[in-house]
Length: 169
Image (cartoon, rainbow, N blue to C red; front, side):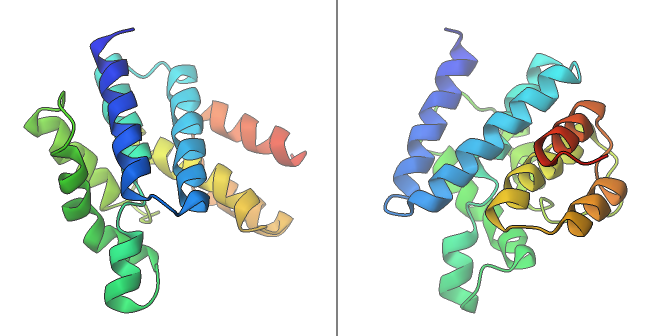
């Protein structure tokens, strides 16, 4: 096992503790992480970007609980606003991330519900992985799935997964 794999395992454990008692949300970020990793590997993402993407996928919804406390809901924009500060609290408990990596992780968290002006592969894959999970968890309609695929998905492997998951073309 590499140091990066150990660091990600420690981050996963720290996030499970952070979300302790909220099994639904723990299950969600584990699934998003797995889809993000699978897409990134299929798209030949380099190891450094993959490491940061995996960490961001684990932490992407870290702002939900504080959003519910402050605003009474878990609106995506509130998650983007509050998530980076919460992510830094979790990252502070895990060794293995440098400042540049932490900044990028927080940037991705601050944009994981922003579907316009997506110019980077890591941002795109995080959106795609999150939707692959949300399409099932939120029971998105066939029309909604097709619309999101057309407007957001760009990674060939993510498009293939979505089409095969939902048996759509």
